[in-house]
Amino acid sequence: MGLLLKSMSTLMTSEPFLTIDDQPISNGQILKYLQATRKLDAFIGDIVRQFVIERELQSAETGVNPALVEQAVIDFRLSNQLTDANQFQTWLANNGLTYEAFHNQVATGFRLRNLKETVTASKVQEYFIERKVYLDRVVLSRIIVDDKDLAEELKTQLQEGANFELLAREYSLTDDRVMNGMVGPVSRGSMPDLLRAEVDLAKAGEIVGPIGMEERWGLFRVEAILPATLEDPQIKQSLEDEIFEQWLGEKMQSIPIRLQVGE
Image (cartoon, helix red, strand yellow):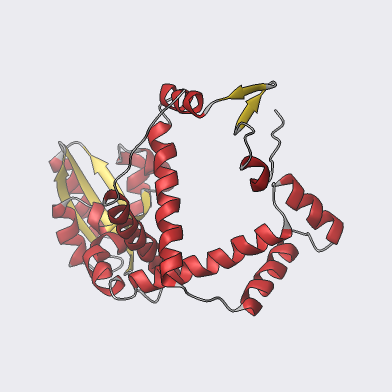
């Protein structure tokens, strides 16, 4: 399927917005198609979202250092092997872009980043504290059995020096037994309350349990404790994105929207 993109100046004429097999498709038909495929709400949501973002960028009037934009363009071309001018022009054409439009996209990216920082700067610390229980992670291994007495017996064996991995492979009922019971990093906030309370008091290398969970009993070895910190760029970026999306959603909900479908 080939898609021909026309310039905005062409779209501003009386020519139909969309033509398929030489047949013009009216705006009303487009909306009906979207509604029939249950994509209309998402379509309208994307439009409203972009409308709010562009309006906020205009009101913020944040400037962007041209040198940063030019360097970002250069970095993009280098990382995507588009240093050759002809190759870059071909890439632009294949993506329906002119150099000016691509340059503007990059500049808008910087402006959007500045807007996010403005919106989230005063909120990220408090939000981090609220979310910390879900951001903290603990690396666990486990042995899950369906009998409390067996769990107690395995706990005794472990205290006497038995190999945790061997017992996990022999007795555990969960699929991770093939990995010696290794579960991997688990969010503290996703743990059952009883397990989290025990793990919070344990140190790396210690075994907690048996703990009853859904008619089964578990022994858990704390392999490592991975506390979250705002010094982690990925965590900070993730929180900023969440705060920004919440802020953006509130802005979108406050805007009256009217949809008029005509033939």
